[in-house]
Length: 92
Image (tube, rainbow, N blue to C red; front, top):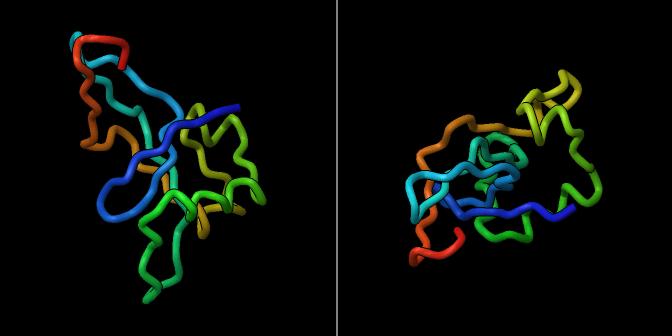
């Protein structure tokens, strides 16, 4: 499975599902990232997302944004984030 990522608000986020926004842009339905301990700044590069190779996400998280109680301290999900990607009229 291949999942896109975005850099937003100084950190890397998984962007598993996208919706079209007009003819030349798309938006992620949700963003998913690891949570960091209080006082530890988030890592702002895609390498931070490597944690999901060790801790694969379930479809409930990726598709529905539902975080199991056991993972609520380690995963953050943002629904309908203010992020969009433009394309030059082609496929976004």
